[in-house]
Image 1: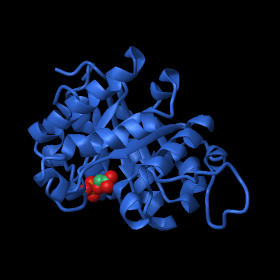
Image 2: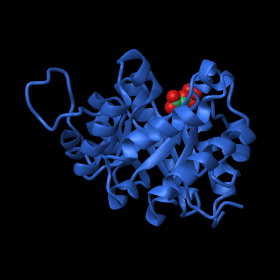
Image 3: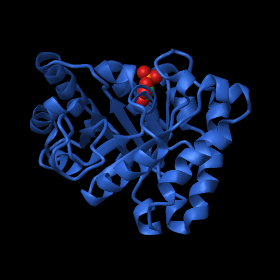
Image 4: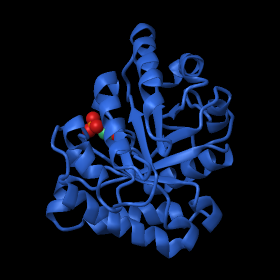
Length: 258
Ligand code: PGA
């Protein structure tokens, strides 16, 4: 049985409008009240809805944040959002290096590492995403790919900084496809990532390691029950209060105090 506390974070991606967000956020704030104390929950929303999210989640146990930040602190970078701006709305989380950003916005491992630094400097928790494509998995390159993605970030951080990150393993072939990695496949990669983190220093060994990619109420408990899986980064299922809460509950069922 894993000893670490659980963390479940919703990644809304580019979904949501004011009216539907209100219903979803209120349901999540209410529904998480009953969870065991060591289950932490968060949602990463589109930037225009940060103020709404803050007003509806403040006082609840749900944390909130964004899905990306600029690699710069401020300046003439049209369209960019700085990590410090995000903190003005009470956010504590920022996803960096999601595979959709690496693929569609050509974000390099180096850029993801710089963004992680900006997030840490702003006092936020970065959720650093790593993951291999189907071609890479089939070529037996999974460890090489996710190891290199993680190392690029770790090399830029001190041990104290690295101890503040969250890592999300998200196989690209499992994202939004309905085809989750099996609990065994996910655990094997998590164990590998855990050893890589431990090599950075004792304080880094226990950072939360989330699994993401088609997590649903039906597979959450088995995934979260694995030794090195400390929770999940949830895309599609985080848009439905009932499903997201069921996934949080699954984390609660196998949490230390659950
Ligand atoms: P999914 O997305 O749960 O819809 O597969 C996960 C993610 O991309 O973070």
